[in-house]
Image 1 (tube, helix red, strand yellow):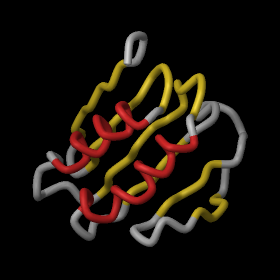
Image 2 (cartoon, rainbow, N blue to C red; image 1 turned 120 degrees about the vertical axis):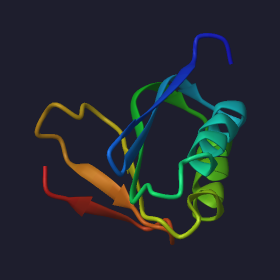
Image 3 (cartoon, helix red, strand yellow; image 1 turned 120 degrees about the horizontal axis):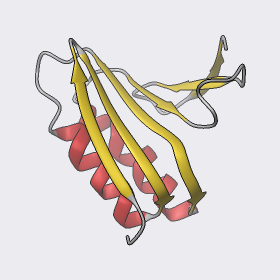
Image 4 (cartoon, rainbow, N blue to C red; image 1 turned 90 degrees about the vertical axis):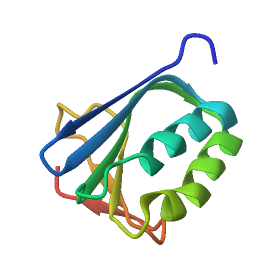
Length: 103
């Protein structure tokens, strides 16, 4: 999608995929492709949606349904909202159950 960007980085055993712009079906597929390419030694996968302006329900559904198979059994944290504030963060495990974590 024009105006959207996806950046990934690896730091030790952490893999971070950061999406900026809009989350729709197309960008969700790009995120899933990035997660599926995370090297085998990665133990912590983070999908950062903090820079997403709009989220289409279809894109969120594609992301939620695709994460378990793309992560290959590894835990995935999906973050959204301002990460640098005291706003609550949410963690999504392989069963795609959101639960509040400490700020």
